[in-house]
Image (cartoon, rainbow, N blue to C red; front, side, top):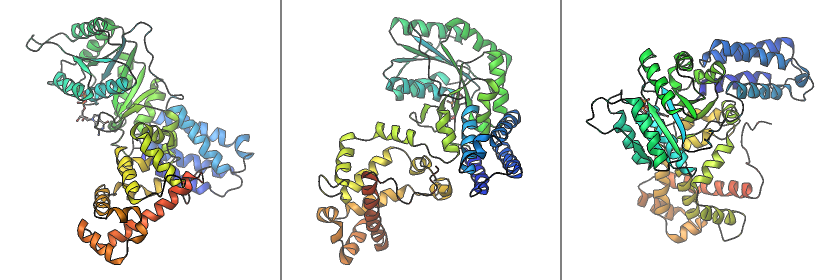
Length: 446
Ligand code: GDP
């Protein structure tokens, strides 16, 4: 996501590097480049204008001319302004004083609303809530069935109208769903409503009727980040027709541009609250404007990575590996290496993980072409080694390498590469574990 914008901005900042002072011409040129970068990424023109004016204004000010490194100061300003247009501080869900908290979803058909309902439900469940999903989208054929399937995958109950009861009244279903939640002590209700392919008066009226019937604590507008400029118009139409408290961006995994998504918060004055970036139910999280800005500027998103790692990793196993790396608890072996790699894989695709590390923008192409089967190959090689070889990789000589490559169906050069890589990784991890930072990490800002 936002790859085009990231690349463009990186080029812009490159031109400033090494400059001791910024001249008026430098500032103008930078502002012009930022403007083009934003427009190319599909950011709406009014947002671009305000953004560029603010950057220019601040770039001329004391904070930059007094700074030791003006280029870095400009990056910081762009970062701040990005955070601002994305809605400022992270906006968390407001829960009702008297449960159930009612969350209503609105948005166009195909925006990913039904998928999102289940993602949000799973997310809430993981936070210790007991959500109920309500299928009030009676428009799209099989929307109810789809919600039931997704609800089941998320392990969350779905309230749906009885089949065969005629067309059904979505307002009545929504109302009955909230009643059901109250009766069965669910503390959050998520109401999925019908969308249309385009903005349409009847759909707006139905959504407004559901809103009036269930008085939601939060109305979330769900929008597909891939649709481009039209997203801004749709967002405005829903704001006028139904109103909402926050925005959910879906399909952030899909688009290299995604600038429309950057425009919605500032145009509607409603913060982006959640982001959805994949078809899996777990590809979903709170939206943090500051972290997103860091990612766009290729400053990495270590916080998210650390949080995900905490959720995924086996704490005992990680502690054992860490102890070994700091020289306690025996040597860090190829078995540990394999185990670590399998743990990391649980986090998601390698390209996704690397995308959260700072300075990785320059490797984007290699990451996108990374063959995930590589890990399978590594696994096969390690599993073709004897326990002795795994514990003490130094003993893997030429004839052993030949045997291992045959056993794993790989080339000797693959085995060589793996063993070399293991020693390199061990060295790097040991220095990280000892608090030496990440050696040789390119492009670290600051
Ligand atoms: P609805 O009509 O708004 O309820 O949309 P759906 O939930 O049925 O989603 C429409 C399509 O988008 C489905 O094929 C989903 O699998 C897909 N989808 C939803 N969210 C995401 C996402 O974050 N990333 C990707 N790549 N696909 C998504």
